[in-house]
Image (cartoon, rainbow, N blue to C red):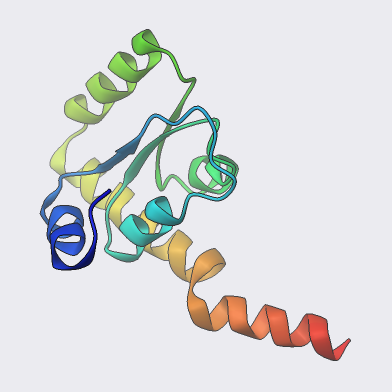
Length: 113
């Protein structure tokens, strides 16, 4: 686990965020990477994988060595334009579904209804 400045340096310094997890209830690290405008490569065991796939915010794969390899090859074969598009989509997906303001507004709406 990386925390503090080292964590943010790693996220901002990476080309893409990769999480080949066997199970993630939410995937906060994935959302943090998206907030930093990083495309994400995640297994379909991260419970927000559907939003990633629907919004072209990254690459979703089955969690096996072969599928991880395929996902990495797919990422590496993307053009710079396609990678930038995916980074932009990651940030847009973060803003549309996971930003603190949006989550707080949904929470307050639920409480008030």
